[in-house]
Image (cartoon, rainbow, N blue to C red; front, side, top):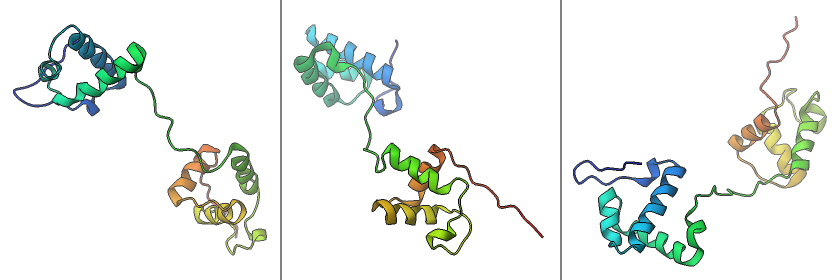
Length: 146
């Protein structure tokens, strides 16, 4: 892999994919461990001088495996799979009016209120939309009757 800089411009590692960054970490650590100055290694690639030091600490503590890229776990979901299935069961083929709502259509706002009432879990409207999409429940137009 060829990595270069234009003039004195620094390269932003956040724009690179995970495999490329992992490869760069491994190469940088090898060069530094073979005796090259860490700041010179990073300067040759246009990265910030201090970026290599956490990589070196990780390498010394965990070895080559520590430099491997990994995907973050992300936040823990607020609703379990069983609760998500219950939300789906409320909605599919059912009317929200028996639950005390005035409107005969399921909206994100109504689903949000139901989740808060039943599970005492607060979700934002975009989160409710993502939940409905993941179930998979899609927006539907009501039938028009004369």
